[in-house]
Image (tube, rainbow, N blue to C red):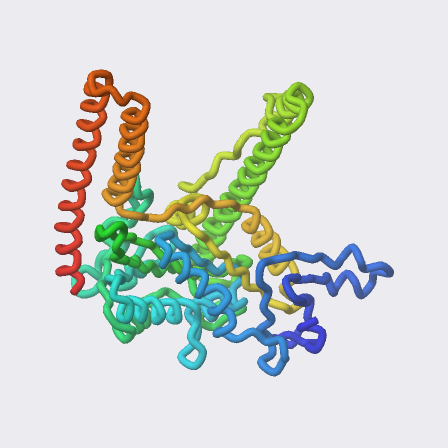
Length: 452
């Protein structure tokens, strides 16, 4: 086990966490000292990736580069395919969220690495166009633009709106066109410098807000000799850390902490509800497949007993849970990322110290719930290109029908009327394709001028 060689954590306390391959084990050290049989006090969690980053001298130590190769490359791969992607870090204050997401000058984190690779793709791959960057923070349930300059910077908070098709967005949030890595790093450093931090028990410069760095990644591609654009959105989220309230803090720190905990509790409720709904959906699908393969009457009655109204409190548990996205600005803005059109990765950072046992166990349970959520993302392709593809498929289908009808009816008198109707439909669809193609060419040429 990677942690077996380390008896003390970074803060000098006993280590309560063990990491082996894809498993994390946490032991309640305080209880196991007095217990005769401590097997019940050892809990195990399984995740897609597990990293040990306490001691750099440890042979199993996971570097920032290793984390990027596992997670950052997945983010870029999803975006290059036209999907929305979200990566967010959750954990206790001082457990390493900001270090993982932002890093230090000597060991840069996921966000700057993703920005650099994204911009290299835009520069070296001809089909790629441009990236728009935005950076915001949610502080005391208010949204602040971290990249707003000049007179606009005086505006304290921005309003969150909801578009009927695109979902929640921040009104008047500044977007910056970036064409090289230096511009991207300058914007990132500017936003980090503007972010609100304060000293806490666990960290001298703890983040007191949730930060969302967004890259709008635009690609121009040729599909069936027609120019097309796919626009992917990458959300890189550094959450503020949860922390127990301390009456010795000043009133501002207490207000910050209560708002942070409120949003994180809401996030936990949303994740739990989404996980429960995903499990219910998978159960219904398995029952339906059993019904289609097995005895319809027997399985059908079993299915109705599971999905029926039922009496008492049991019936309500079988219905899909309501998702309280609007209870927090954080969950409202991340609505699509959490349970909608996005490929989402959650990084749970924990402290190995036995002193943080409760917080670590809570974080691991949080992550275990999130792992059960099943999103169904879709490629954000150009609507006109999708319509052209559907029209071309319809044209091919009509042509095959026309050919089949002519083969079955060699007499011209019998096929003239049907032939004429099908030919008219084919001609109308081909004209629509030509008109749509002209619009796409015009739009694409304008986009190329704008981004050049």
